Structure formats: structure tokens, C-alpha cells
Length: 328
Image (cartoon, rainbow, N blue to C red):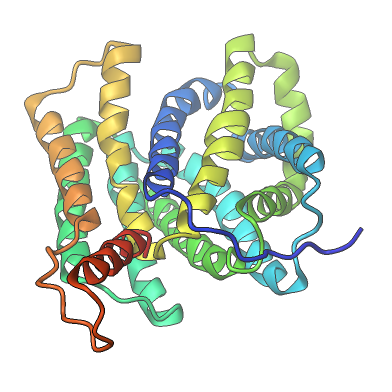
């Protein structure tokens, strides 16, 4: 099979990457609800492997139908690193960490991930840190802390659990930063499919646990594990990669701060867990921070063109530049 190449394509509509990011955020938020069910019957490693296998099957089928071929050789380092860190290490240690600490503490520690993404993106990818992005992330992180504190209640928080959640945040950040350059060489589907496959291979040592626990697990827990693989993994990671290829890692990381607010809303609607005012305030802060981080300063007056073009043409060039900038 030959390696495929990514040819120059016309820019997508400006709303499409935003919509893709929105799909990712909603599905990742829904994952927390499903993990509650599946996590009662499956151990952390088995749950991660089952989720990744389900995701790899769906992604592989779509990849075969679309006939996109293997990713170019230049994309494989990023695919391998992101697959190992994000699809493999992150999913296992997060599942494990959430068994050692309460949900609020886990949310606070793991939400250090977007901050690490922005810092690593600036250091390793040469991305800039606009003031609005930094300010928005600060507001969102404060909101995540408020949500976490309001959810902690009388829960427990072991040192091991905090360290595991911190490792999950580091693995998440490293995986995103490694994935970004791979998307310049391969398609979102290729990067996601083979990243998921790498993660599944890394989790194969848990195959025995998965087989043993699947025999005794209640059907709702198994269905939730399959849901995690098909939607929050196969679909959401693909839409994430599509959006990430068209913006910076830091800006995409900041977008995920909408997840805590959506988790609160979904728990309210699906689990009848009525949030307190403290939790609602934290969720509002998360969303406000995302809005600030995604906003752009108003552009000044258009500079006159040196080639003597008309004002109308210059304005058209400015509009096109604004549209392209929204994808950066």
C-alpha cells in the first residue's frame, strides 16, 4: 500500500473548525457520565483497552472505506508519541486516578492540561501566547477549580491519586503537542486512526483483565464502554484533530475548558444531580474564559495599498485576512 500525501486544499468555511471543536467538547463531556457506569465493572486498564479497541474498529472501517492509505513517514513520529501518551497512558492513568481521588480533585488537577499545552506549544512549536488566550485560560482554570471544590464534598484524595491525575495532565499535553505537527503531514482521520491503534497496542497487557471482566460485567457497563470507544474516542478525537490542524494547540487546549461546564449540565439533565450555585458559578467562569480565549481584538483601519488598488479591493483583502486569521 502506498503512502498518501496531503495536497493543497481550499480553506474550509470558517465555522467548520469551530463546529468540529464543539462536537469534541460535547462528546468528551458525555464521556464522564459513561465512565461512571463502565468504571464500576471494569478496571482502569481493561476499560481503556476496551474503549480503544472499539474506537480502532470504527476508525479502521472508515479509513478503509475512504481509502486514505498509510500516513506519510514524516507523520509517524507524532502519531506514535501522541498514540502512546494520549490514547494509551492518559486513558489508563486517568481511569486509575479517578479511583484514588474524588471527582472534584481529579477535575482540578487534570485541568492543568490546557495550561501545559499552551506552554509546550510555545516552547516546542513556536506558538505565541496572546494576552487574551492567557487571560481566558486563567479565568477558565479558576472556574475549573471552583467546580472541582464544589464537587469534592467529603471525598478522598490520596497522594497517589493526585500524582496519577497530574501524570494524566502531562500525558494529555504531550500527546496534543506531538499530534500537531503530524497533522501537517497526514489527514485528521489518518492521525486519529493510527494514534488510536498505537494506544490499543500499548494497552494489550490488559487484555486478560478485559476478557475476565467482560464475562461478568452488566450489559449497561459494557455498552457504555463501547459508547466511549465509538463517540468520545473515534468521532471526538477525529473532529479534534480536524480542528487542531486549523488552529494552535494552545487555543484548542483552552477550548476544552468548556468540558467541566457541560459535565455539570449533563449530570443535571441525565443523572438528576442538581448543581449548587457554587458549581454553576464555576461552570459560568469556564465558559467565560473560553469565550475570552477564542476572541480576537478588533482590527484597526485598513492600511492603504501601495499598488494603487481601490478601497473596495483593499477592504475585500482585509475581510479575507480576517477569515483566515480566525483559523490560526
